[in-house]
Length: 267
Ligand SMILES: [Zn+2]
Image (cartoon, rainbow, N blue to C red):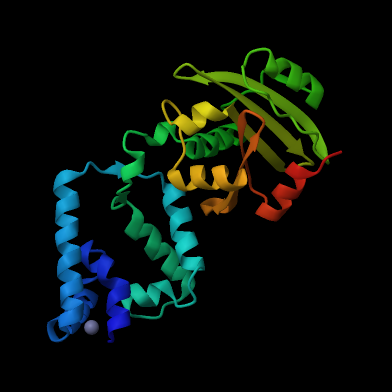
């Protein structure tokens, strides 16, 4: 055990996410190393302050997994080894991670206080995609891209985006609203199996976070680059971009490169 190893796990000790055995092993180091002991104690104190003063917010599973994935991909050392001090077959590790996550994860997001999972555009997009696949969202119009565009734009104040897509065998439109905020939805069937779903809302409304909103990470990336792309758990990819005064949020089971190519391909 060295100080680096201890430092990488200190949050996990404070959050009590490790086994008793692993926790003891790490704390033994803190017993003999004043520097790490100080780090541990100050983090514990900080957590106590946060716990007593700040309201916690549940994070949707998809967001949690995307954070985990981003964290894991950025590092070559096995995250599992780091946390649990053992090497393990990756397939088993995934199952364990899933078990660990269930029920525990309430992550502290100060900037998103007040925004519920329900209002989060990422969760809404993923849930709607699932509902399209499962048939519980029924298209109000199935036609050409141009007809779908005409149908959708009549009812909303933002510019609807119905790009022509290569290999599209059918295009459908749905209008609805969430707590008074109007939304437009476009669904493409590509070939036999692939479906791309695009959620659309007024950009200012989405950025304001009043009724619908985005995690800060997504907002920041959209402001900087006009794009936000993540491959999420369950083989789903979400691609968000800004189109005029509209926020588009597309979900499919394609890889991100394939999806971006389709969405940006101008015919
Ligand atoms: Zn140390």
